[in-house]
Image (cartoon, rainbow, N blue to C red):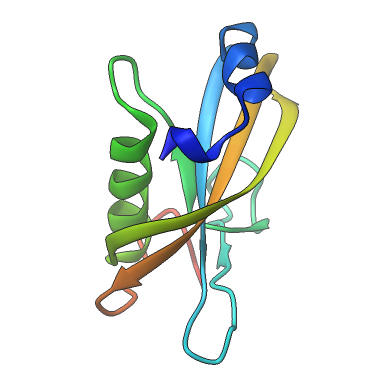
Length: 116
């Protein structure tokens, strides 16, 4: 999966406090799945694609697969392509989110982190 990301972005990863992976999931009508965060979560009621942090010792592909399953109940079938890299600051941490267009299977079942 990381072979889809430019060498420039890969070389910048150590500059960030936190790496986040995100999934652009489209249905057969090309509608993208967005989730709305719970009012109790950080960034309450914000809309986002399924995403989450890469844990220490975890590969980005493993994190992407885990986050998709945890947040949507969907199984990651394959990564189609790299979509974007966005850096941001959250709670004093310098973050980089790498988003990928993916293909999944199953039915959506939201986690408690999301209300819709």
